[in-house]
Image (cartoon, rainbow over all chains, first blue to last red; front, side, top):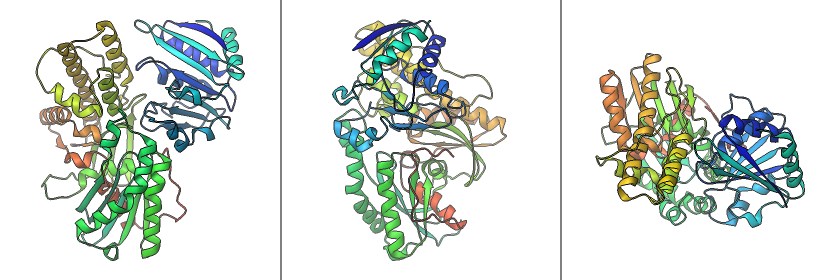
Length: 159
Length: 338
């Protein structure tokens, strides 16, 4: 497991972080986003999606109620998912989340720490810790492809 | 609207399985197999259960809607079902039921946009005597999954002026209720608690500038999370003050934007739609503001604000009357902006 912390001082830093990560993402990648209510998971998802080229006319909104949002129009499709409301591992099968992993686009999965034992082994997991004001710490962790992305972030992101 | 066309509507886009029969725009029956009890156990909607429940509920709900309307399938002139936006696994069940009945009874079938249904719900006639709006009107649609302002010029001429950039208003209610340990669903609890006078925390609202019809509710949610973290274990009085301030912040911006849109487009009718429109604080504040601005407010009965099948039947009836038909291979759409 490769891990690294990143310090975020402002919303602009979050956008820079999203842009840096997007530069290394390719179809099939899975990025999990964890952190408490209000940590900024949807905001970071938006920053990544925009950097992939999802046009501003497509709102990147919380998938909590919709469960899966699909955003076309970038250099690859972005699948934005949310496990917040899921009650059991069966829900994951019911939703067909597996069909998106390793597919033609990148999967951004909020509340990925629910059912973490069912998580793909080589995902990149970003855990956002709420500081004061706009300050956040993002811990990036992963193995395999996820570890590659952690290393990529270390060279690509400078706040 | 001419009576005489009877339409069966079926709704299964998210939590509720519902069926309704209307005659013209008059509601003959409006049935919902409510799943709220099942969801309470988990503090949220459980899609797997919801999906399974749709399968179990759809035929009994249709049968109940028909019998409450005093009709049989032989009396139905057309069938409408929600085709999106929503959860594919749930949508497909209502759609399949609708197609099967339409094919067996040889009546026309049309797939309906759930959001269009919400926006037309205020035009349904029932025995409550609630007045219904003529076109055009400005509508605020606020629910768990959507928050937007629509200029409704006619049933099929609808323009979205702006929508949320992050969380929906209803989602903000649920998540703030969760942060404060108030239970699910959050909207009714917060609405009830906020109705008591008292101390109030101040919370920010986003996009307050003129001619901006976008919303953002993630800022206020984060502000509540940070406030709770500062307090450690907030007292009953502190929770009450947060609840009042949160409700005021959300209600103010929702009403402000729809009123601003109506005035800017010179539309003198304002319509509330979606589950958040069942919030009493919102209805009261909208009525006060509309009265001072010479706008006529239409707040449909609460059961027509939350997800229901009458609104799907009405949107379907208008489409069918205009000659629209959907093919039997119509697929559900997870995303379907108006």
